[in-house]
Image (cartoon, rainbow, N blue to C red; front, side):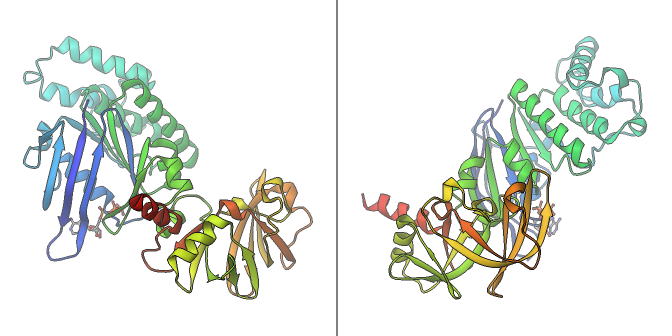
Length: 383
Ligand code: ATP
């Protein structure tokens, strides 16, 4: 079991910009932490530095309070599971799982019987007992990924590192394996660092998620906090599917939000944040599920309505996504229960009710800071 500490870690390749830029992160013992972000944001590089597969350009990496920057990967006592499984094709499942232990049998002071027991026990946990004699090529993708997991588990490492381990599986298997990895983590409680570009995977698996962009950590919090209180516009748009609607408009003196010819009334907390910010434009963030073509109780009394022309309706079974265009300015998405969309068709002009008290307000700038958070921090600092 392990704590993993990243102190101001950077990685620079050649004379390019930093792939990872001074990131600091304290990973607790037993924690399941997920690094998530778009392609190229530096998550794999971060994981590879933790594994020892990539030299750290600057900063300190500590495992259990010991600086390990110069410790060889095999001496860090962590196991990595890759996207492409990296199984030995000529070896049986059993051999694949036993191999790393057999190679270091003397060093680890293990007998053959101990290795045999560990492999068989792990195979049982992962439902691989029946296929122990088979070669990887006759296994399904899901079974191969379980063997790769098994190979990591038998080593009983201090930490697991996962690099997009589910990317090669089809959607159904991905969901099943994701639950399996979580179940394993609950059982083994081994500190786990997991990389994915898939925000849903991150949200469902992580105790905390670390959202990265351009080599920089944007936010590190529990999935719910990241969802409900995103630190900036990037995080707001990255987490949640469909993405949050982010619409630029002008704040008025009396708490209005002016969007072209239409007007919304901001709740006091958002109006106050806009006033404190003082800029001529701000960005309102509305999650698609906070919009409905028919008023619901959670919209009660707000009277906040945007008119739009319906463009596309995407049925999802119990819900539908409605794409609508507002004043030729922008397209927004509403996700609502199917029955609420009854009678609405592409081309119709419809009124969309906004649950404004659930909305967010951001700076209209590249950093796009969350203005409510900013105001809170300012107030806390003054107190
Ligand atoms: P992906 O999901 O596409 O793997 P990622 O978030 O894991 O993306 P990294 O693979 O860590 O991103 O890459 C971060 C940046 O570092 C990218 O700009 C990438 O081009 C660059 N990079 C990664 N490896 C190398 C390398 N060996 N040499 C030069 N640049 C590299």
